[in-house]
Length: 186
View 1: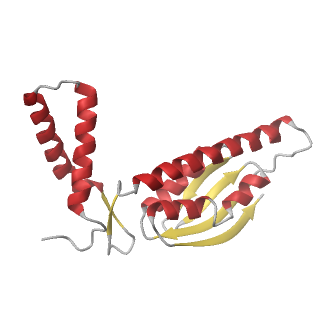
View 2: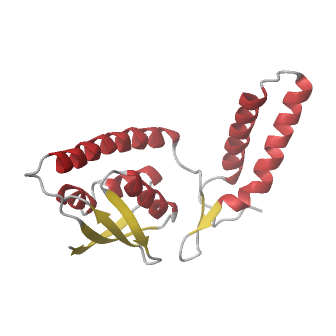
View 3: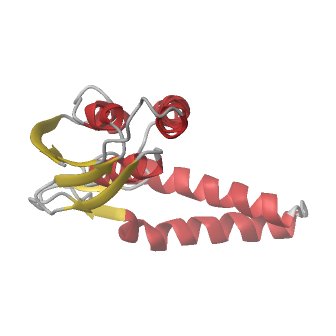
């Protein structure tokens, strides 16, 4: 009996996970004898079946369960390259702010509320902000309030733009989201 609260097809999730585990096993072992390939296939299938329930996260309402690796690979690649571009731009912004005395560093704490049904959206957004130079995710509350330290005005403005990183994360997961600016503290 299929659990209707799981978003997506569990069998597809398990097969994809088994294929990835088997590919990783082949990469590490390099052994192509039939006996070892059979062991690898069986182990991958059993591991994906046993671990699948551990890789489901529920939304706050508890009505849906999301597979944590249930991300479209094409969207993931696009998001990765977009994020790399943002990292380069943020690096340039931080370098300019530290090297040129006329551009002042203006640290502040930016607060905003970001809610999406999939809890992975908040995790991905918090980590994406964290790896971006000039920003540090200080806190994320259960209500979805983000507190982020921004080094420059440009970094703070980027955080307050719902079409920027918050919108890209929602696009990555195929989610609708709510975004509310809550101000800055200097």
